[in-house]
Image (cartoon, rainbow, N blue to C red; front, side, top):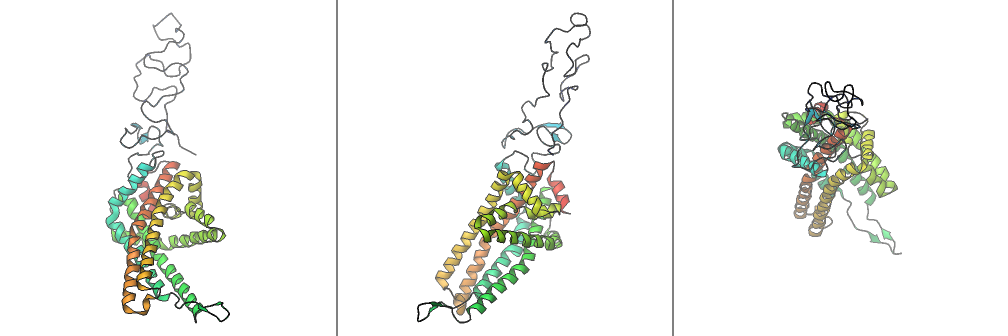
Length: 374
């Protein structure tokens, strides 16, 4: 249930407004008589004491500040002044509109993007080594394994004109996919540790707490197994959706994109929570995740371009000669390095998006989120 900021009742003045002795409380019943003022026992019809609202007024206004649910001022505009300890007029009690991680409700895409950039500026020295070790290295190794175990040979043509597979094709194909699947499972655990470590760095730096690579990796390894298991399940759901049609698989990928942060911060039903977050604020989450996905798609396109260049320069079987093998491996590693910015954008973008969705549900700040990581 949404939490509405505390508002003064009808029997109390607006915070900070004067209430001299003898002045009526707001919402006083008609017929109230000011002591020693006007005809005895009678108050003129429609009369209002100076500084008080007219009769029938429905509650205190928010002069110059947004009403609850109204749009938040654009960056550079005045923020709501405190309406009490930890309270901001128009937000949940405890919401800080200048929190370095949590984008307040109704703030919009601009402050969300600014918080993503700020997280990158704060943490790139820790995040970049984490991404290189846990994301880029596995991608480079898998790229090299693809070159080594790709089935060789070309289709031949039988006397009757039917295509004939090269000798040993099926054995090579099973070996190829078996090696890639095994490498994906092994490196998936390392990648899960990297995502957990990166999330720990982003949250703690936003809360002003110390971060170090050693502590980040220790946290990542501690949470890697659970995150890896949920990643396998989500990947299976996306793959099943893609088998029916591309659109259901793509929809599942968007709807479950926040499962990782949900698991790390809440440690409960990450798939169900991510699904509900996506559908509760469909347009907001879709827009944020789409920006992250766009960066990943751009990275994939770049990798495909590098792969095309490798095939054109070194041929479809580059591992048959030392010179072409060295060149193809170098381009595979280079393609993996090009994906590093996309991994950083994915890491930061999903954490900031998750924090924003938590603010839509109730008061939260960077310090609380960092504490929830454990």
